[in-house]
Length: 229
Image (cartoon, rainbow, N blue to C red; front, side):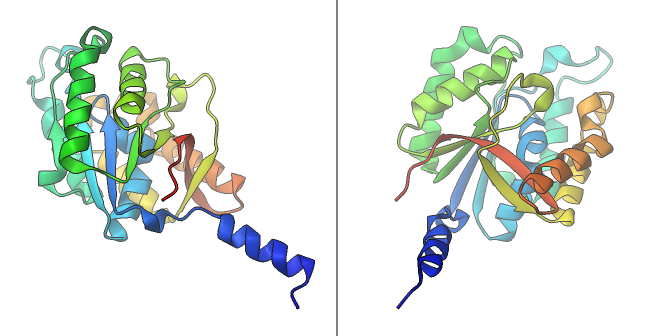
């Protein structure tokens, strides 16, 4: 006969949702580098588990580049960065919506997401947090929720844009996952001046999230929709 302790212990184990049920993952990045920053370690972890990972960048932020840099600088950098993470070149999709003007293109962005849903039919969608204060990030989060109503969606963390962030989901990682994430971020030489691309910051945030689950490294996510199949 099982004791009450055994029953509670077994129930606790069974209640834990498993990432093994996700075979296809779609990362939605408003701008090149957002996906690497928010969930780069998780991407590496998924690829190591032979999951199919697709990365969609909605803007190469040409208008944000210094005038002396070529307009395709961030397009080249995201190709290098996602290659470092292990994403196949054919799984990288790049659009060129104008940076900081996504709200004016909401319907086109929604239709683009619907087309991606029909084309890829992923199991898991990773989007910016809906609490993100950047207008482009807000559009991708909101329209992602509209386009993928029958899919599990997690919101990734970009602390400088998040006034609040609900750490409801943690993905435990190892040091090499974060090292690879940092290596990918080094590909963004045009963005090296950004404080949030600092190696120490990236590593310390991963350690903080890991400590919250009594582990060593982790990335945290908001649970926007969880579909159990």
